Image (cartoon, rainbow, N blue to C red):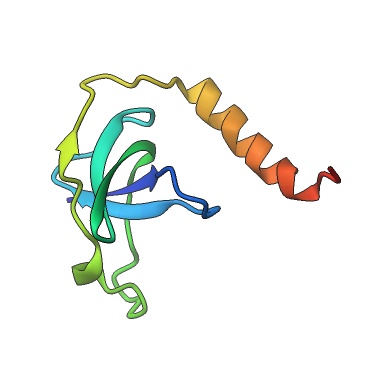
Length: 95
């Protein structure tokens, strides 16, 4: 079982964790449940583990990815890293 970090098009500055039967490459698009709707998101981190002794992380509440849209990444790692840097800088910009 793989835990996948997914960026979804919502006005929240965070990634969301989903579970999938296998690890997915960063940059792959996926269909995920988000509240009452389903959204297309992008995998940012393909696989990580949640510490087993951390009781705060209730694994049973993590929703599964419903569908993998792409077989191969549509966004490359360089673009994902650039996006992360921009997101880190934007809050400090005075517009």
